[in-house]
Image (cartoon, rainbow, N blue to C red; front, side, top):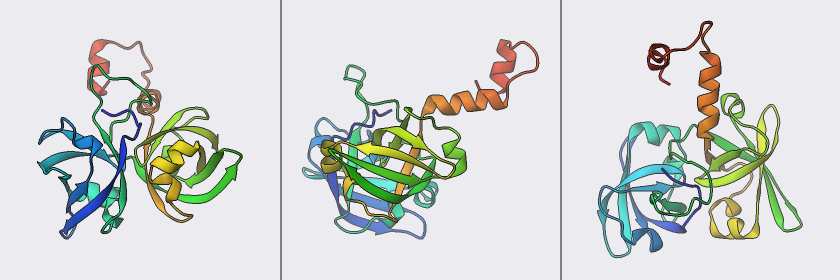
Length: 211
């Protein structure tokens, strides 16, 4: 589990590509502290498992499902990536609950500065927009952000200068793709509403319907 507060921007140090899989070597510093093989690190919002460690980098495997369903397949040598270690039980909770399980890929439609903010319109699949609310949370490339506007085909978020400068999102251009993870609680509420019982609920009903 993550919070969407990016700890540092790493750099892709090596890629081994398969037909629909990858092994990534990522150069980093902060996220290597106290990290062990088998730990989870969010890379561009994707929860990945550390498979090896060196003094200045770590490696992760990207399986076919992740390769096909995220932006990781488009990374190249020296690509910057947002990094966050899994949340410590005794740590501060600065963002929102982020699982690192990407729901879909969006595309940047427009970027516009407004005083000290950078507003970004992102096209998103209808099913993800249905799970979103204005002033609710969304993780974009692993960054916990607030939704300021929703339309039938896109959502709008705003970056403060720190976020724009310290993550990969500030440097992305119109037409670039981003990983999207909608709010976990919104997905639970949607599922509950879609499968709401016509009779009083009991423990057996909840168990059979995955609640």
